[in-house]
Amino acid sequence: MTNPPADLVIADLHKSFGSHPVLRGVALTVPAGTFAAIVGQSGSGKTTLLRILAGFERPDRGSVAIGGVPLDDGDTHVRAEQRRIGYVPQEGSLFPHLSVEANVGFGLSRRDRRGSRVPELLGLVGLEGLGHRYPHELSGGQQQRVALARALAVQPRLILLDEPFAALDASLRASVRDDVQTILSRAGTTAILVTHDQDEALSVADLVAVIRDGCIAQVDAPQRLYASPVDVDLGGFIGEANVMTGIARGDRIETPLGLLEVRGGVDAPFGERMTVLVRPEQVWVFPYEDGPGVAGKVVHTGFHGHDSIIGIAIESDALPRPITSRVLGALDLAPGAAVRINIRGPVNAWPQGTAPIDAADATVARAG
Image (cartoon, rainbow, N blue to C red; front, side):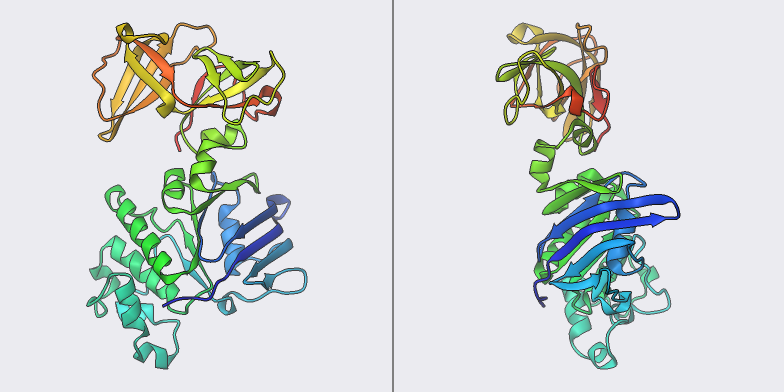
C-alpha cells in the first residue's frame, strides 16, 4: 500500500490568540516520504502548528501546501475533513464501543469497510487476528497501532502524530515508536511527529525542526542538529552540554579544559571571548597517574546501565561547577578520586555577543 509523493511546504506562517503571538513566520519544507519531528519547549508553538496543518485552526497569515496544492493561504482554506491528512492524538482516541476493525474502517466508505482494506491495514501494523477485539482488550501499544491504522486507512498525503507515545510506559515507548517508524516507512507516507522529548525526535526522525519562540530556529538531520547547533541555547536544549568561556587563539580556542579544536574553525579575531559547548561524551576520564590532561576530582557518579555520568571538579576559577562526562558502561571511580580529563574531537564555539544565554560560568545545560 503506497501513497503518492506529497511534499509539505509551510511559508511565513503566523498565528496569534488575542494579543499573544504564538507563531511568528514559521517556514518549513518536509520532502515527500520523510519522517520529520518538530520539537520545542512548552508554549513554543508546536501544537498550534500541528493544529493548523490538520485544519483545526486557521493561520492569520502565511500558507500551507501539500504536493503543490494549497490548503491554507490568503484565498484558500481546505476544511480538515477534506485534506486527506491522518491525525494520531496522544491518547489514540479510539471509539470504546467499536471493535478494532470498526475503528480502523471508521473513515472508509461502506464498500471499502467490507473489502480487503481493513485486513491489509491490520497486517501492516502487526495486529492480524485482533480485529474483533475492543480497545479495552488491547495494550497501550496495540491501541496506538490501531489509531495509526485508522489514520492510514484513507491513504493520507500526510500523517500528524501529536505526542502519541507520551502515555506509554518507558519500557514500551521505544519499541512502539520504532514500530511506528517502520510502519510509516513501509506505507511511504510523509509524517510529522510533534514531541517535547528531544531523544525521541533524534532517534526516529529523518529531519528534526526545533521551534523556539514561534519560529523554526534550526531544521536539519538529527546527527547534524546535535553536532552543529546554530547557537549555544539550541545546543543545550537538544542535548546535555558543558558550557564555558574560552578565548580565541588562532585556529583553536583556549579553555579551562585545554586548547581545543573548534568544529568549522574559529570564526573570531585572536583574543576574543567565546562561548564554548562541550558534549559530555567528549570528556574522556583517566586515573590521575595514567597520563597528561587537565587535573580534576570526581564529585559524583551515576550508573544508568548502558552508560555512566561522572561529575568532575576542575581547579579553576573559570569553572565553579563540575564538568560532566558520559562514558559507556560502568567506570570504577569513587567520589574523591583524582583524575585527568582530555577532550575528544572538535567542540562548538560562538562569539559571546551571539550567545543567547549567560555562559560566563561552566554549567551543564538541561538534558535532551
